Amino acid sequence: MNEKIVNVEEIKDVVVVRVTAKKLYQNVVTPFRETMISLMDSGKRHFIVNLSEVDVINSSGLGVLILTWDRLSREGGKLVIAGLCPLIKELFQRMKLDLLLPIAGTEEEAFEAIRKGKKIPAP
Image 1 (cartoon, rainbow, N blue to C red):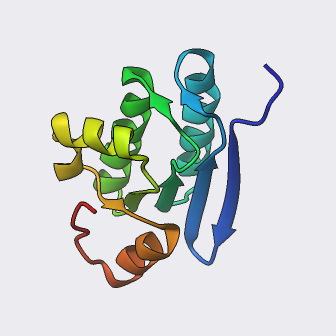
Image 2 (cartoon, rainbow, N blue to C red):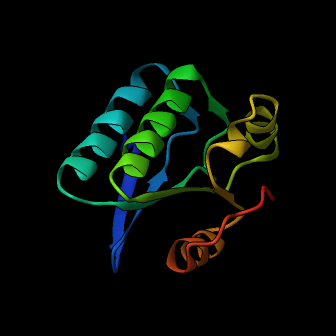
């Protein structure tokens, strides 16, 4: 697979990771996990993960988000998930992940939450 899985952009002290794959599972998860770990290992602490292009996510993809949230929480960082499609939003709600992972409707809302340290209600 030669397609790019994520686009990464740093805006001030926030890293925006835009997942460009439609399906975040199987062989797509490994490069996503490696990207997130590499960014955290390099000292990045505030992340927005934009999943607006993602239609399908499996437990491995969810595991990367939880791993990232856990590590950032322990190291004083923040993670906000943005742009969930209705089906994935429902999955997060059914699994109660919306109570663990901050979710914003848009990147702009996610930036606002990170900058002001606000608790984000599930959209």
